[in-house]
Length: 205
Image (cartoon, rainbow, N blue to C red; front, side, top):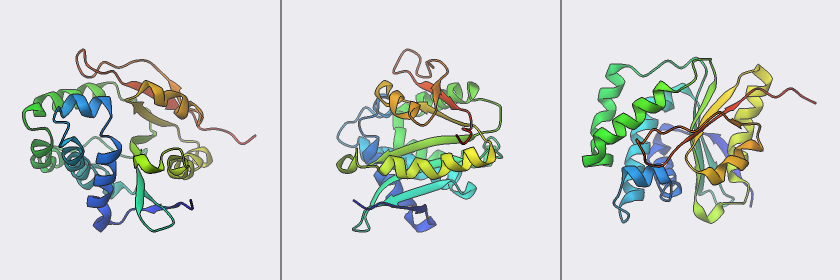
């Protein structure tokens, strides 16, 4: 399968969100927040669309992958090192979408975000907020095509990178790219954990 990766366009945000919603349907943290299994992917897509549109997109780190038929099959959403914490106005803009996505779990979602933010590294870095691919293309190099160019840029510019893995099984995959686990984060108050991972820029060998 031939994979094409490029920066997302504004009109593609809804499709990007649906792809991520499907990709994260089996994610432990998403499942903890959205208990409704039948509508989890749809409601997660609302969350992703809200976050990408208001928190991520303007910073230029939103990439999408297409298969050889032109269908979107994956996405990676980054924040650059010069990004600053979201403003109060931005938070207000996300509120309607967050209510639609989380409903009675809105407070839990807010507490989760606060705990994650409290542990976020202060050193400037590229932050991988989300990366996901459709189940039908997993294992076919889509995630690699999405991650590779940004990590190469990190290496060229000497910038570190950071993510939180919500699945223990994904840790070895990220380790292949030079990420290292820095601990275990209980952002859910006794629910599923997260594994923060830090990547120092790699020098050419």
